[in-house]
Length: 145
Image 1 (cartoon, helix red, strand yellow):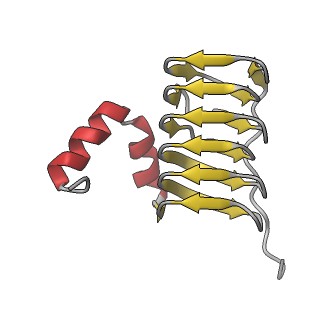
Image 2: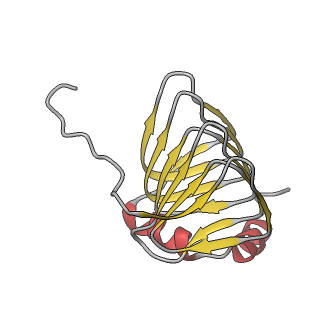
């Protein structure tokens, strides 16, 4: 719009697919691309800076998400950290905070939490933190009081 160039999530080939009838309990660490149509009860963490997470309308994650590039059309219950780009589709539902560098949000998307902009460097450093380290840092700074 208005002559500005739109930035799209970097394309990564989807190497892992969690089907609609599948539910995984435990943390997932991945590189490349991950597509979730089923359920994940645990944290989803990317191991590389080019990773892409796609969550379909039926997909759901109960845990923290730390992935540089995210296309979300499903549900996440937990904080979402997107070091590069996050696209929230019309059916996206987040119950938790969204930390982002670049964000696209369609009409109808829901975020029940805070939207927190991070600069490029800040977002990359945040993406490298583990969920446990983040919780300790939050407690130390008094964010969870």
